[in-house]
Length: 78
Image 1 (spheres, rainbow, N blue to C red):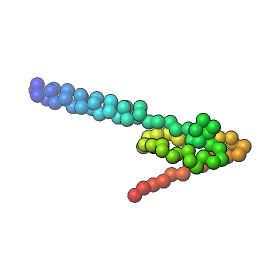
Image 2: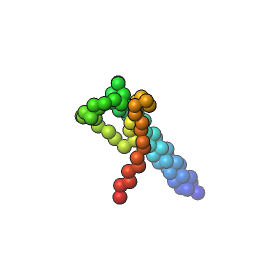
Image 3: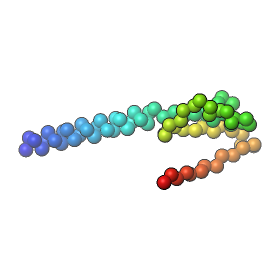
Image 4: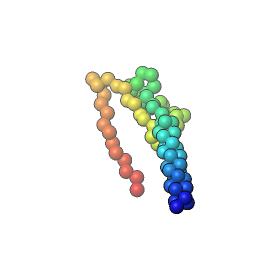
């Protein structure tokens, strides 16, 4: 019976390590303000140059709703 409790404790520790690892990955996400400090304006084509984007990063669009709008597009990879 002692062996069963040891396996359960080992399993619980493994689960905790996995949960901590997942939290560290989420904490490393970066928020990118599209267009830089000025936000989304004309001539931002060079803005992404030399930037590294990773899965989980957030693209933040600051724009004037009088001149621009943002449409979300879902891309599915097979």
